[in-house]
Structures are given as C-alpha cells and as structure tokens.
Image (cartoon, rainbow, N blue to C red; front, side):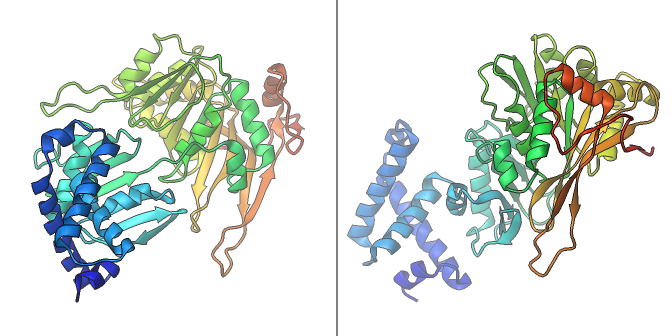
Length: 444
C-alpha cells in the first residue's frame, strides 16, 4: 500500500501500524533539523508553528506528493508526537470528549454525551504510551515508575489525570483523563433535563438562606458540575474558600481562595491532606467553605465547622441515595483520629446538614437530580428525611431514552419559616406542610 493510501486510511490495523512507522521516521528527521535549545526558549504556540514549518520543508524536499489534507494530517501527527501527547492530542481538542480512557497501547476509549465508545486508534507500542504518560506527569513535577506506580494529578490546563502502571495494572499502563467543560449555569442544567424551574428556585433559596447542602451521587453523576453551579448563587461579597483534592471548581465570585491538597513526595514527605486544609481554612475567616469531596477524617472537621457558625457551606459525598449519604458521612466522621461515638456523630450530622441533593446517572447517559431531601431530625435521634422533590422515571422505551417527571412535595413548616426569615420565596409547586411532611427514617 502506498504512503498516500496509508495516510488516507489509518483506521486499518495493518496500515495503521505502517503509518506509525512513517510518523516515527519523520519525527526522527524533524528532531535532526531543529535546535532544541532554541525551541525551549519559544512559547508553546511558536514552538508548534516552528516545528510545522520545518517539517513542511522536509516533506517538500524528501517526501512523496500528497494532497493538502494528507500533508496536513501527516504534519499534525508528527508534531503531536514530537511536542504534544501523540494520538491523544486531537481528543484533548475535541470539546465533545469529557473523558479519555487508555487501557494499554491497543485500547483507547472516550466518553461523549455520557456514552463510552472505543476508538479505532492505538499507540505504536507500550513504550510510546509510557513516553506520553511521562510527558503528562512531568508537567506537574511528578514521576511514574515501579517505585511510584500510581499518580493522581491535575494538568495545568485543568484536566484531572490518573495513571496506574504494572505491576499494579495487569492490563498494561492505564491512563484516565477527565476533562471539565466550562461551568454550567443552573438554567443550562434545566435545558439538559437535570432539574426543573421549581427545583432551581428552591435550591437558590437554600443557598442564599445559608442552608448547609450536601451533593450526593455515584461516580460520574455530575456532583462537581452541580456543586459549581450552586456555588454561583453565593453573594459576590462573601469570602469563599474551596478545598479539593484536584482543583476543579471554577467559581466566578471576586473573593475566592482555592486550596488544593498535596500528595507526599518521592521520599514520602510533604503531604497536605484535605483535613489539614479544612482545619486551616477555619483560621482564614471564611463566610462559606466548599469541600470538593469528603472521603475521610476531614468529614468531622467539616461537620463541626458547619454547626459552629459556617452556615451555607457545601460539599459532595460519594453515595447512591440520600440515606446512604448520611450513613457515609457518619462512617467517614468516625475515621478521624478523634474517637467519637456514633451517637455523638449523629448529633453532629443532625445539627450540621440541612439538605441532601441526590444525583443519578441513567443508562442513556443523562444525569438528573433524583431527590432533594431535608434532614429534619434533631440531636442524637435516628436520621429523619423529608423528601421535597423526586424524579419519577418511566419505563425505558425502544429508543433507550430515559423520560419521567419531577414531583414536588410540601416543605416542612420549620424549613418554610427559615426561608421566609431569609426573605426567600417558596416555589408555588411545593407549598408548605403544617407538619414535618413526608418523613422517613434512615435505617442503620
């Protein structure tokens, strides 16, 4: 098969392997003709333009006659290999791709619109994949090898990266890149079907009235997206401190302090945990504390902060139901080095948490708020939950699209009074119950 034909149809596996060889040959020719010292002094855009120009001269001088599109494709691939992330480079530029999953050199998957698909592309070898991984982690001053076979980091451009290599990964080097699109406004989430106008009014009231809100959901349900959207409702004059493992939140207010945890260095020293940051944030005069995800002993510190003057704080937790979220908070709180009885933890949670917003990702890739639940229990009594909104899904049809309706239930009088005192309207679809509303107990 000719070079021209191979470039035109790289999806064919045999042709694709030959094409990888051609790219490697031209990459070597390119590296022979450039001055590396000069290249290092250029900005990224200038560096790419210089490489493309030099490679264009090489192809004109030595290469075959190619069409304009084939020539551009070859130049792009060679420069991506020399400068960028190789076959991953076009995926990172594709705005529709939200997650890139590399399972060894021969299997590349992406998520688009909530659906995972395998792509007809591959790395030329395991060595090439490892070079790409090393290039990624080196941008954040990390390294990956047999002594440190796992890396969890954030790229300067904002993507979250996880790497795990042999001997821990039996399928070869595995790379996962999660991309975060521009922050969604709550009105945009309505258009996507994640909630409706009445729920938006209610959640807006909760945030402005300084309710403590927990966003709960499984992996990939959109917890960070919703947290970011809710945080936009915080008044601009308030001092907000965000605390995350990998900084993903993109708040637009003027007075925001972003804190990010730090893993230990290669000597096992220098680690700064979420708990360290939560404790330190209390000394920074915050009006609101936003914790990206609680997953350990820092939960106790966060609960104490919420119940001692830091109303209006927000956090996410990994759980599949509102009841599970509360039980998980109790379990995580017990992981603190401060040994506190479960009964005392119940007291902390009952006094700290006001609202649990439960997210679910459905089979068609859609993400919806499936429940807004209020914690109405007191003291050390068993958790009592009042559901005020829920999504009732219909049976899935032949098109596999999930449809349903949001149902709204009356707010307990105590909650309605609190909104009223904060001058926040009660959405008409909810109304007010003179009692506690439809309350259920969370089982132990």
